[in-house]
Structures are given as C-alpha cells and as structure tokens.
Image 1 (spheres, one colour):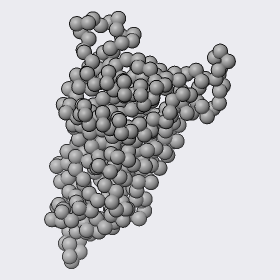
Image 2 (image 1 turned 60 degrees about the horizontal axis):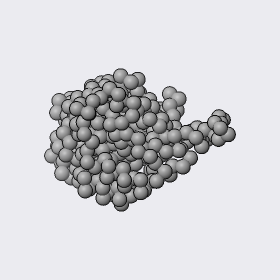
Image 3 (image 1 turned 30 degrees about the vertical axis):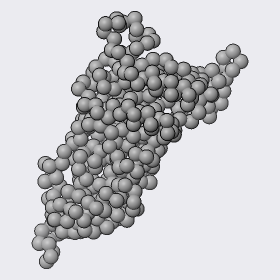
Image 4 (image 1 turned 120 degrees about the horizontal axis):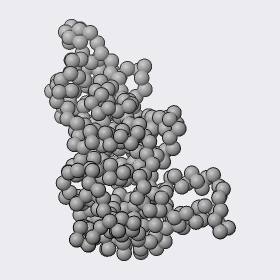
Length: 366
C-alpha cells in the first residue's frame, strides 16, 4: 500500500499536538519517494555501496568531480510529477547504485492525495516504457526521506520467489506428469482458476510419488539470486522473517533452515505405506485435513496474526510474492511487492518489481 500508513495512524489518534494553532497533520511534511530501476540493470554488485545525494545535507561531503551525474530522466520525471501532483516539491536525488536512482519529493501530509494508484496512471506508465524503467513509489513519514523505513516483519512466498522452481511441478516431474500439473499451476498462479480447487486437483495427481522425493528436491531446488542477501540484511536489522507458501511444508521447513527464517507456513500432504499398486512409501494424493490449506486468505491472515502477536503495525510489514494467491497478502502489507510476477498479478499488485536479484528489495527499505 502506497498511502502513508504510519501517518494515517497519527491521524486516527486525532490532533494531539499543535504548532502555531495548527494540528500535527496540518503541518507535518512527508516524502514521496520514487525509486527508479532500469529494466536492463545488472545484479546489484555491492549492497554496502554508500549512496550519494545530489542535493541536501550530504552535498558538503562531495565535490563536483566525485558526485555522479543525474540520469537524464530525473528532470523529465520531476516535471511530469509536478503536473500530476502539484502539491509536491522536488527535494533531492540519490544514487543507490550505478544503476538504481531514488528521488524524493515533499509535501504537506494533509494536502497529499492517495498515491495507491499512481503507478497505474497512463502518464507514469508511458514514462516507464519510454525510458525502460520500473518505478516504485512509497510515502515516507519523514520528510527528508533519508531515514530507514520502519520495518519489523517480512513474509515471502516460496515457489518462484525465494526459490526458482515450483515444487509441485517438480514432484509431478518425478512421475512423468509434469506437463499436466504445470498447466494447472500456471493457470492458478495467473488467477485464472481458484487456487484451493487447483491445489486439490494437482495433489490428487501426485498419488504414488515416493516419500523420499523431498531429499532429492533439496539437492536440486535452487535458492533465488539475492534471497540470502535479502534475508540476511533484514535479520541484521532485527526484522522477523518468514515463508508463507501454497507449496509444501517439507520444502518450506528446509528453506527456513537454509535462509535462517523465523517462520514457515505451508501445506501438509498425507503419506501412505506400501500398497499393491505402490510397493513403497508414497504420497496419498490428499492434503492433511488436520492443517488448514494455505489459501490467499490464509496468507493474508498469517501476516495479520504475526503482526498482531508481535505488536507490529501493518504499516511496518513487507510481503513479496509472484502469484495471484499472494495478492491479498501484498495488499495488506505496508510494502507489498510482486516480484517477477505473472502479468495479471503485476497489474493488480500495489507494487511490482522485475529483476535479477531479490536483493533489490533492500534498496526500498534501507
């Protein structure tokens, strides 16, 4: 959600403080931060690169010779934004890396519109196409825009997000039915069919898969580029992290251990002993009814309940996923990012980002 959630909480509390006869929300300035990701960028080489600002307090530490030149699109974008949101004033631009740039604009909180749909505005989308950019907008409660965004909880989808594969498709591959299952998976992730129904249909097709398949998958599944760096960066800041997956708990628990996550939520499959048809331990083709199915609603509820259990405002949460079953979770989080997502998901998600490394997400937080 791109609206300034931390400040809406202040507004709900009422004008407790006054300045020159005006309430806090009438005088406080906030920052709209636009982060520009070139579509052709390389994997970020070093997350410890010190950002340099083109204006503001950091200028005193720079010389004209050392300060990187601003990308040519910054001025054009600033002019465009001035037409769309005249209440905003340009403040500064900083270089996060040689590829990624971030501009800050400020305005009075009470005067700002709801920015939740700004990226869907035709002029913005046309600008992105013409300049080969993806822009993520965020409203920061601090007008300087240089303080870290408050973040205490981060949840991630697993398949095609933290890992590169769809585990259910890999299970199907082990018994030679990958094409049939993959076709259903693609439709479910794109939102063309109900997720819970599609999951039951696909799980039924897995009857007979050997139970030792999980150990084989742990050797072949690949963790997404930048996932380790992203989780490590979050944990260093004390952020509670977890995976919430429509996949299966053996792989979610394995991934939790590999990345050092705090929470793993996923579906549970029933297993059977040897039978006449399958003379070895195997999957039964059924979900374990003792555990809830991880539907889109459960993903959202997991985010809400974890936040409530740890007294974390939803505005200080992050969610990242790629499928339509992630949309409810993405829309509830303070920062909800569709990562390399299906086309329909990118259109509907509050934020979308495509790239080579999940570590890019760190540039939106720190």
